[in-house]
Length: 241
Image (cartoon, rainbow, N blue to C red; front, side, top):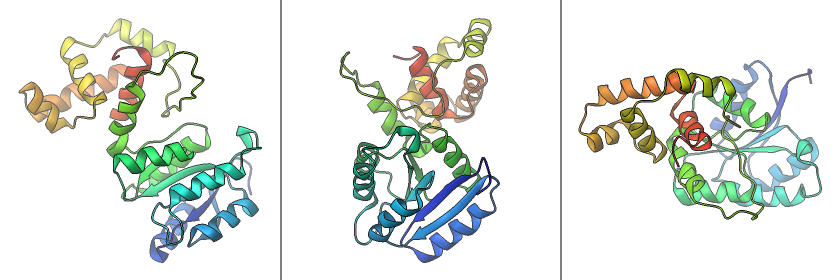
């Protein structure tokens, strides 16, 4: 494997999906697929033998769901240093709160929906390999609600980042030079709460077009790539509590 490449394995029971993913990922620069499995049992064995950087795991496996597979795999890795552990990216059609939270509780690092584009999946793989959690925007609200729950001091609970690990000095400087307006802060709070543009428009009695303009301004001021990053940055910076 070339230096700098991310090694990936696929655990997916649907043959066409698995073959298609492998072919698409192999065309992505910096990614190499080392193996694939059609069920959890062979997938666990493969992970132990191949030890990829990132494992893409489907939840709906025939012999054991992907969440249970993730939990068992994390138990097998319990003696390893974090830097040597394989990252787990869940790829699924399930966007229920129960599935999302169970996956992260089991030790998953990232969570993507199956309708994600291959370019976005490659982006998610690079972020996950880099130690950040990549969370599909369609389910980000679920995770953000959990992040907002107060955790007592001294609990020793580790928190994951979502491609943003801290407030960058240049962002703080930008906010000083171009602070968010009262309306933008109001919309940012609704974004954090998981509201769509349409829901924000209905809540604030404004048009969807106006909401989009405000969202665009918010992203520019926060130097965020998307709504998920803006929401996480808002929470971590204290803009929204």
